[in-house]
Length: 255
Image (cartoon, rainbow, N blue to C red):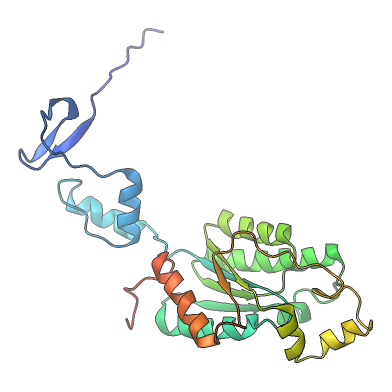
């Protein structure tokens, strides 16, 4: 085709010579470089980027344009049996995030969603999946606009939870799954709405954990067991995860 390729050697920065040099000419000299992955991490964590890598003006524009993990939309999805403590922990997390983070926080509780967004749906497998799909869609809208959605829903089936994750991630959000793994016996003992008692008497059919399955997450981002952990300790562990993963920054207002 009459096209000739021009093949350039690999370059890296020489701190000694203060210039970029071909790696093949280093002669044992220690050279420096920043990969694309490392650059994105530095931008996300607001770490210092040396001037030899790029002009200060360019770095400033990159920082303005780049949305790191602590500024992306975030969805924290609590799943577990009825009366496991999902809503309690989710509510505590909402209050903590509202105090620490600059992003708007939206609480999506399964019971409230059932009353408004999913009114009329039954508890069949298909309708339960549709309910989770609707919650996932709303959460993805929150994430798309850079907000935080905290979801508390039984969401018993893995495939439906995976669909919710897909919707959020396609919207550019970060999805974290929290399994509130409170044992069935403790949930039934609490039974604040009397649902377990009715299900065990046969008055309610298709009740999760009694005569309908709950498919536990295989690789949750966090596991909470209220039989072993007090809510305050569970919240502290979850906040630690959010900070360590970069989902919530240590450099937010008020910190």
